[in-house]
Image 1: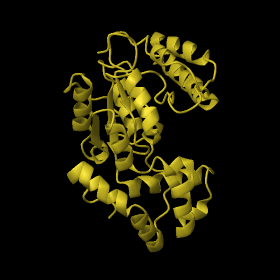
Image 2: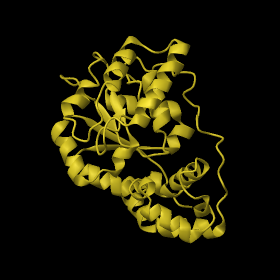
Image 3: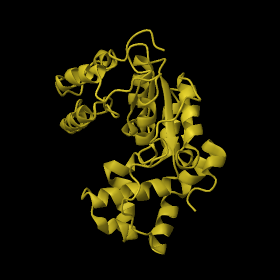
Image 4: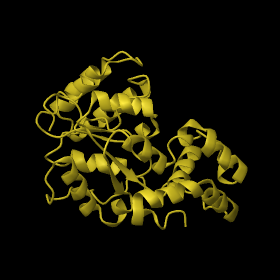
Length: 277
């Protein structure tokens, strides 16, 4: 554990790859004191965002009603809500968010960090040199299809891209929500130039959740083999509408990610050999 307040680890993604599952598994583990906000989104953006603050307050109200909102959660919330929104907060502000975690492990699970460039990652390394970095990776074709469906369902993109191959290519290559967050090999290469990045497989969230939890907990310095919380195997986002891919869309996705899929196989080995099929 770190000698001064700050995160013991960063989980940099990927989006739609089990980070919500991971957060709740760690929050339920006695060796961890996870903050009441999964994604701090401190690096690379103005911080804190009003959207993040609104989500934190909604979570506080829900957890207060359930009786699961702790004094540490409240102390964090008071500090977080009092911060001025700025792009140039010193890292000491970020470290201070973890001052209420005591001697337990804690971290920041922000998938957006996978999109940061080399300059930003180098600055994080200088500020947090001993922090562990991990990522959960997923077939980029399946991941981007899930993300596109959610964005279309929520009105953030035109649903035409789910049906038209040219529109799909345009969104994935130019929309900021996809252009920099859809390529796990590229993200891994950037981060691994500065940190030793531990990689875990999203498929294990679905197929062997207990074993995956224990592997991640062990890597982070916690105790494996403890009882699993009752919701550990649940997929809280299951059941969302997903449009079936037409042959044209499927072919466009495979072509769009052809180089990335080859790079993933080279970097991640067996877990990536069937991706894109």
